[in-house]
Figure 1: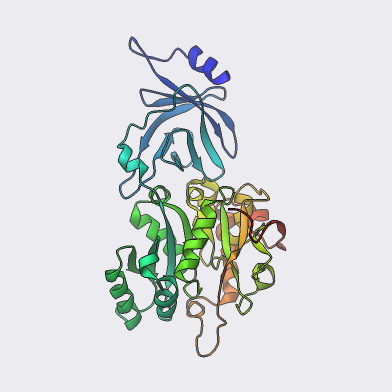
Figure 2: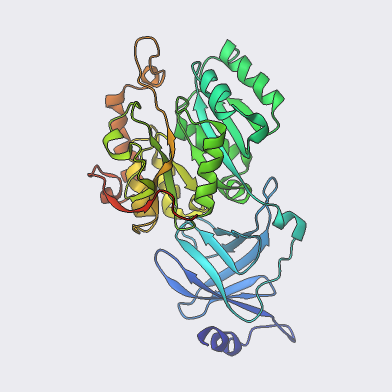
Length: 377
């Protein structure tokens, strides 16, 4: 009712022509209000005031519809993605615009382009030891792969491993390989920029698995992980559980528990997180992403940046993976780039981005709930 009243009392006209108006309710991290989209490409907030211009589009290389609102964002336009190709709902992490009255905004773009389903993405920054994992686990059943694979090779360009990866990518149209010496998260940002930015990634993919190059999960496990996430809209971040022989300081917490399909938590480690791609459009998560160099601290941000809900982050016990111990026969190549004790230097980057310290600082992780094994969905 408030939206209809605001729309009718606005008196919006273009010359002598009454403008069409489409009413949405916006929930943002810092405000909520009715947002009125007008047919001349302008919009206003019904009660808080302020507005700007809007547009619907599918970016080059994308498949899902995006809604851009320019004029309110402190650091540029606010961009939302349609999860279903329609115009009733748009989301950007914890924020959303939901149609509330009258007809929904017309697509205004090619409906065929907007209706193309999004895929999952497996992204990794890989070194010279990655080939057995890439070839024998992630691509074990190439005919069954239902996701794209993007790899940035940080080892020596032209090495045997690099050449083998290029040969694999030539065999599989869903796979691409780039060369860049850096750590996983800076390489992820670089790759997103190569594709056209975070909005393009959110339009092309519904979930993104940002995984270390030694995490072993076969093709069917990766497919299953994406299937579970698509059946659990509440999840913004997750990770596969780790089997009993996996290495890592957090294995006491995220080790596989066969009693559950998943456990809702307030933490998943940065080794193998999978994120709902609309989080890439969330301005606060973008700050976390820009601050991340080694991966240290971003894993503590996943829960608060997704609204600190009890069901927004989970360990997926239905999909156990293996993270092998490192030894003299298989040393960590990342330690050659930066010693583990130096990873804590990322603190200054999070502070510089304005990320609250209670978001990224160390805390004891907790299990907040669970779904028993064998449950529907």
